[in-house]
Image (cartoon, rainbow, N blue to C red):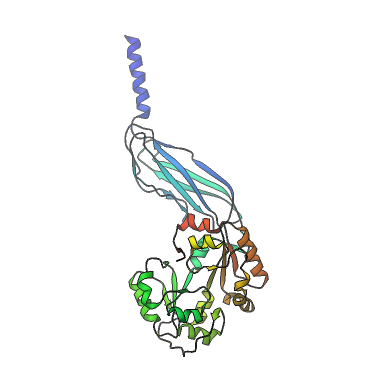
Amino acid sequence: MRKAWVLVVLAGVGLGVWAGPKIWVSEQIYDFGEVKEGILVVHTFLLKNVGDAVLNFTRAPGVSCGCTSAPLSKMALAPGESVELVVRFETTGYGGHQVVKYVYVYSDDPDLPQLTLAIQGKVTPCAPYEDTAYMLRYRYRLILDVRDREAFARGHLLGAVNVPAAEISQAISWLPSTTIYVCDEAGESGLSVAETLRRNGFWAVRVLAGGLAGWAKELGHHLIVGELPQAEPQVFPGAVPASRLAQEYLIVLDLRDDEAYSQEHLVGAIRVGPTGLDSVLHYLLPAAALSPDLQPYIFCVDEGEGVAEDAAQFLRSLGLSRAYALVGGLPQWRIRYGSDFMVRSP
């Protein structure tokens, strides 16, 4: 009888160890080794409730800096249930550093109310001719040419996207949520198009003062493909001078083949292909004579890095000091932003 009583007591003690909610994690430290600055590190921790009562996460996970994110898809786990915790670490700005970033998981596990996870490794600096998807998005400027297609074909700014004013409502669904410069012929319709865009939630819309004619009057043939407009520019209050756009000008050169470009590309990207860089040099080379702060930003993109790196280094050798290869290529854009700013060719 005494032996049986002892067994019951021991069983009760064993159950007490696991009674209530109990959090378990697949690993507490993830070492990503060595990556180049600009690569987004992504790792998945598995959290599981190994207790016999519901485990509640008492608040969203905390992170040790704004460069790290770790959202949870659910805030409670039944016994035996698990959830993935996807941690993303933005390495931009950490080149040359050994880093450790922490994620704090809060739950009602009485023995471990705060579980600390770590993601660590070394970030090597990117080359001077490289820049990151994070910075490409930050610098993104879209030139929206709202003239009719015939006028656009006669002459336009390099990399501008043509959407006639009458078709703006159809473009709302795919225009990127970024800084947009509206360009018309001479300043006559840009303001009304900009107002339409603002009413539809585009927060950073600017109107090019005097349109393409205003650009030509201030900067001549600089970055204009085709003919100069003949109209006299009309400048209205609130419009932005050409010199302002020139300082922020972004050109994206897509070095992939035609099929890859047609399937999906960044809005405004110029299709040059793996061997077609010469096709845009005529328009780019005059900028090499300008001071660096007036040269356009040029991002060379492909599906990896090799072709883009060669192109960026070549452009820099010609004096275009703001030419960059996209670190990690377009896959690094997609892993961060999905299909944002991406369109298919018609």
